[in-house]
Image (cartoon, rainbow, N blue to C red; front, side, top):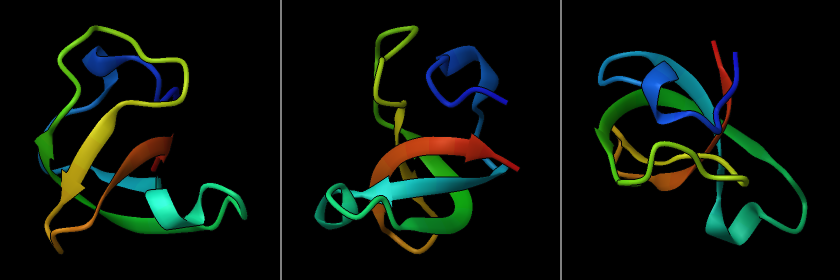
Length: 63
């Protein structure tokens, strides 16, 4: 599913995100969404979320 639409993302789902420090390499980090940080309904680079682990990044894949 598409990580650029806020409607597709909710707390408790498993996603792959790209962390700020991994944006150059595109390394993905898997985790469970705790909070949705992006307020707009869409974002071209992915909706920004905080995972249960505390990591913050933009959603690339919804698992």
